[in-house]
Image 1 (cartoon, rainbow, N blue to C red):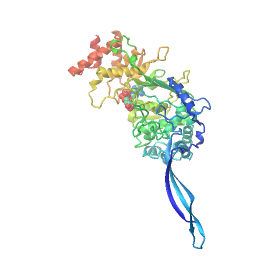
Image 2 (cartoon, rainbow, N blue to C red):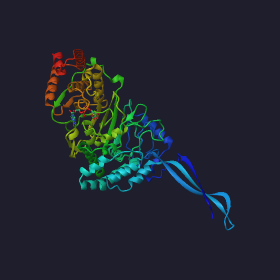
Image 3 (cartoon, protein in one colour):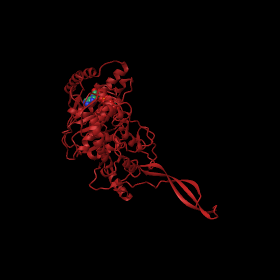
Image 4 (cartoon, rainbow, N blue to C red):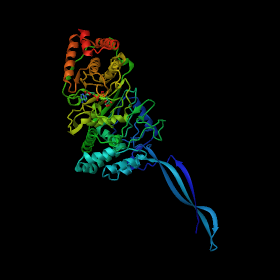
Length: 554
Ligand code: AR6
């Protein structure tokens, strides 16, 4: 016989990280090994991240590396109640004259940090049959999120046929999950963040990228500054933070699943679904390099004194950078936060490029916001989709078979340079873009994009166009001259796609022949731009730049 009393105790255990996941069995965390590894890595600025067969996962969780969802430091807080029955040591007389030892039921409430990866594995091992179940699954390991998946529900309702939806949930999604959960095996080496001021290149395989993107699709990436982080980063921000001034774009795809499913977003989703269908049916075998190119002071030319002669610029009305720039360095009219609005509502040149070549998206994971003297050159990404339209009229137009050959490193010979132009304020005074400081900013940025430090032969031409002249509101006459100058300084010809503007093609073609005829140099053009700025800022005249150059060099 017994009588019960109940007490409650609360304890906190930080050491109680549940690492029972089978998928984590190859995690090796010997500190000396990791230190050696990192030291070796810091000495090199090209970092090869493709592991050898059977290589063990190196778990690093600090502000210099991508925080992977499979890290043992990726934990969540759980309150665990345990009940135990203990003898209180007291005796009590019972009615029948006997006695009983009094028992005490102890409920201990413990706060534990449990493995998020284990939770993700558990949740994703259950079948997901529709978008509602997908939402529930994603939210169960992102408990504090108030994400909405209305866009995704609408997508399956209105954009996919029943058989496409069935195929996605019964075939593609299970394969996406499998690919995502292979992360600790595929990405065994820690992925360094490409932070500001550090010129560094990382090399990943297309398969690794597909696994990282599968995780982004399933929204498994933790935010920086997680609870056990060894830095003090604050995290209440749209951007992930990686260091003092480094901010990173978001990578989880939830923002693409939310809100209203307008046609251009549906088309972006179709591109992404098509990508996953392709990579889960047939593993891509190439490699991709991501190079943050940082220009230091000593590399910036004295533009005014440059004697570089002008290179060729050929302008086409028809064609696009991605269709007709094969084998050339292709410009991405970027946002300083790579990808711009690709995971939101944006749907112009950069966003379209990022969904037809979805491997570019992974750059958002490790590339912090670009500074003025920085660009990113991505070589080896594959194009998967065709499209029609632009902006609101953007539509997925079926599979694209990318036949681009590979280089010796296994990269497709597609180099894309992300370079962000000046964003002019809406309704702002657009003549300020002609000021020497604005012109120099754009010259340096585009030179940093076009400059080829590695080619031993003449670098291929640059495929470009109206950089900074759409959403960012720049003047195409000015930007075409600036790109001609930086291309010439970098020793590269340019192929310019005017995006359907025949009048501009004619004007630019004439201007280029004229400048060649007059043997104008880069420095000569720089001075002419300065004179032009003085003229328009003093007289507030509407004198057109090309008319001015015509008069100036005649
Ligand atoms: N090939 C050649 N030219 C093109 C192509 C193409 N495929 N697509 C567009 N153009 P925009 P920006 C032309 O507005 O002004 C994004 O959100 C077309 O004439 O994309 O530098 C980024 O993330 C178009 O008007 O570039 C940034 O946030 C022009 O290129 C922001 O937009 C400019 O395209 C960058 O804005």
